[in-house]
Length: 180
Image (cartoon, rainbow, N blue to C red; front, side):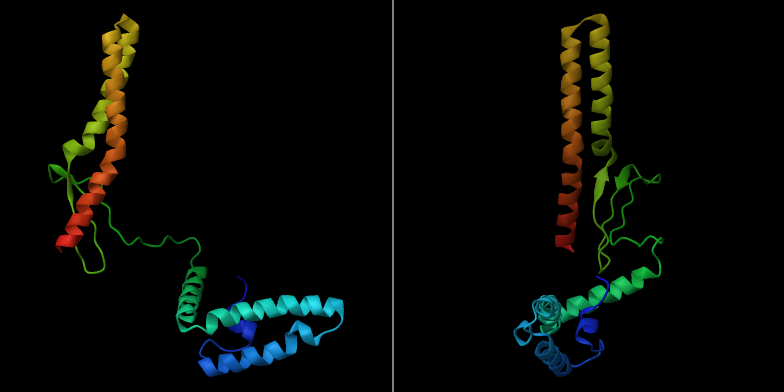
């Protein structure tokens, strides 16, 4: 969006609701397509009236106006630092050398720290994947169908583990949030 709704209506962002209403009515009287008989002028004014109505729909509603102001504030704040990364809301620590478990911390606005996911739970899918690959490769090399089957079971368990681990961490963090 190259211009804000305030610019479309020709008012400042600090304009009162009554000033915005008056600006909308004035522009509607000027650009309403029914007041123009020339086909080209009528089409141009229809497009302009659509833009004016869009701006009024947002600025005429206090909730939508607040949301628009917040979006514009964030857009202006971000335009100065296009390449700079913005910090995330959640702090994720995937590895901690000092403990026997990997620590996932969910820190929200009130500072609630979340869950601990055991290292064994994090390592199980990786070990199943490695064991499955080794089982399948060795089973093929030595031509043992049983070893191939065990390797395939390991690969399936690894896939299930990789899919289940985020859900376990999420459920634990949600439980920790409810407790605090």
